[in-house]
Amino acid sequence: MRSVGRLLPRRTVAVRGPGMGIRRLEGIRVLGAFTAVLLISELLSALTTAISGAMLDAVLIPAALAQFTRAEAAPYRRLLPVLALVALIRTLSIAAVVPRLPQITWYALVGIPLLLGAALTIRLIDEPLEQLHLRIDQPALDASLAGLGVPLGLVGFFLLRPQPPISHPGLLGLIAEEVILLVTAAFVEELIFRGLLQAVVIETYGRQRLGVAYSAGVSAILFLLRGASLWGVTACHGIALVGMATLWPALFG
Image 1 (cartoon, rainbow, N blue to C red):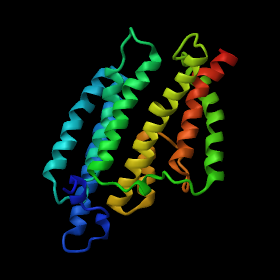
Image 2: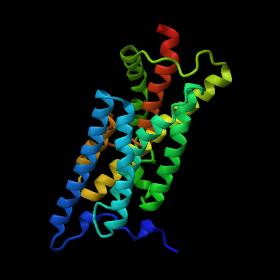
Image 3: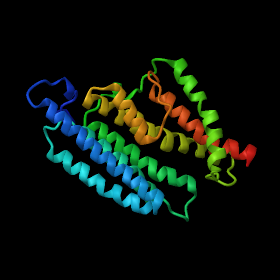
Image 4: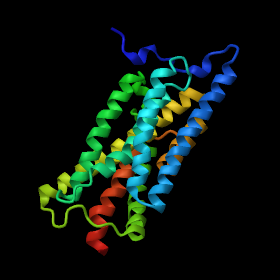
């Protein structure tokens, strides 16, 4: 039995025919509408409470999936589950805040369901793994990008002064903390934004710059470099998080 994803059009921009420009315009409008809702939820979270923004995101998730089931022939259809996954991030981030649990476990409570959701989304839309930038083509670029995580983490520490997720971790606790940050925070976020969102936007609209700009704007990651693999960006993100959480607080806290 073929998966649902295989029934979806992949590179819809390659299709030519009457009304193609109208359908592409419709896709841009849908993308703009969902993006506007995401931005409004961010504003609500900043100006009121985080719960209000999460509630709006919670409404966006079934809306995107419902549109996915209805718009069977729409060129933008493959983008809808990815946008639902993006909206799920804040919803899970609020739901995972359990004061009685150590803060480091919150990352796992958010990251593990998101990783499962990303895997199911990849299968649903039948996204080729080679489009997710998992292959390292320019190791020097990836290494440079990973090294950029050190100064970014230092700047982030002085700007935000975050509290360490674990107050006094032993060796095993420290290792567990770094693994959780690298896998459930850095890798999962980069997989969703740098991998899925960017790839599907490029395939849907046929414009690489649009895909890079959109994924960078939504995820607020300004250091996406053309040619870098997902691993280089994840390493940069992870090293920055680890520095903010453990290294820089120990040196300057």
